[in-house]
Image (tube, rainbow, N blue to C red; front, side, top):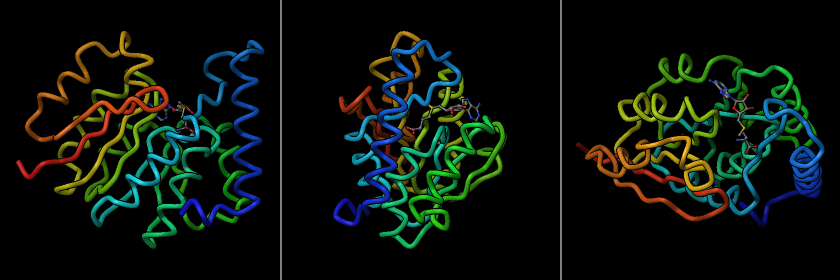
Length: 198
Ligand SMILES: C[S@@+](CC[C@H](N)C(=O)[O-])C[C@H]1O[C@@H](n2cnc3c(N)ncnc32)[C@H](O)[C@@H]1O
């Protein structure tokens, strides 16, 4: 995986990291910012996805395809594809470019639309990364609980950095017998939950 990062992937990652850093200081409106995971979270997600059981890999919140590029490493390893969902066509165009430049288009399928509507139509999920707006988190976790295969993994970002905006959501997952869960203090904080057999 990480030893297979090509010069084109590393160059695009560096470009997106610079764009994301600029967004945070140059007054770009919140909805237009890339709001990507940091690289260490990208590595963590790739390891989780590569280690998940057999089944579908999905991402909720594509932005410019930065985390999808990390997850594509797991796809290559597994011989699977990632379904990555976003409702913003401008962000998806950037993601399309990311995948094309890095020769990863065959590993990531981009879906434009509302995440909750699309996730509702899926089953057999082995790994899900949830990184959309805060209001999507709780309903998305509920949808995923019945769509994950036993042992399937869901990771949700920003649970430490934006804890105040999601009151009770993490606590509910930690107490939910359908999951074994832990808050991993990497990047903005990643709630990592494994579907139990209950
Ligand atoms: C934090 S960014 C994703 C960053 C990306 N995962 C990365 O690390 O490179 C959140 C994205 O979720 C998308 N989004 C927010 N709410 C959504 C919804 N209900 N359905 C689909 N996409 C949504 C936004 O358009 C935005 O691009």
